[in-house]
Image 1: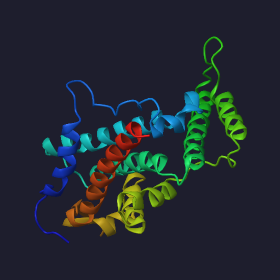
Image 2: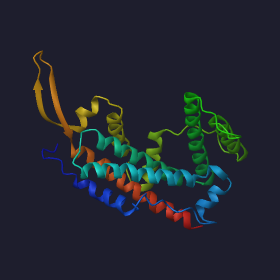
Image 3: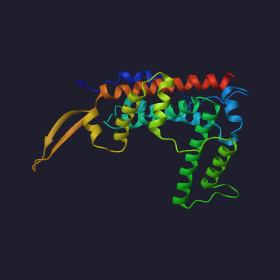
Image 4: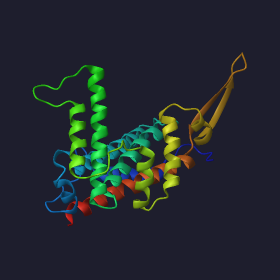
Length: 255
């Protein structure tokens, strides 16, 4: 466990990657697939529910999460939880993009895309129900869109769509980027623990700096981020994000 003040040098490769893809007012998005490219061929029959839409959105979200941490560190506002929660988002986003690109064959890649779209519309339907929102005009509801996606999968002869599980996405995306899926999953579990306010990550992945006792004998610990525990998460985020960009551009341009 490190005993020095927060340095964060291990974050610099990730931050440099993010800065390379920042524009003046927005992040530079991945380009649309070229006609007749491998990715465009995957997506041609999917219409509105193309994988490229999901991949490009996931990539931009990964950059945004990592960039939020960059701005936080520049401002000197480091707490024990935020670096974990922000890079958890970046890790999941980058892994999702790779997962969509890396199915074993065209049918599997299409099934992954439609599964994620169906889950997206299920979540949209839940929000519509919570807010009593009705799409204007002839707009379809999230529930109707989900059924449309399922029907498309049936017409394509794909196996039944199932909601993608984050830990499985990570496990399947990690090897494509040359990473150990168990190690990636382990660091994601710690990050998720911080995101959900669990107790155990504070014991496993923070460094105590001070302790004080109250009059009734209750002890309060001051905790800071443990760089040795957080470093692998930053490295995995960098590797996955860089691989996603490289893999996407290859499949979006080559036949």
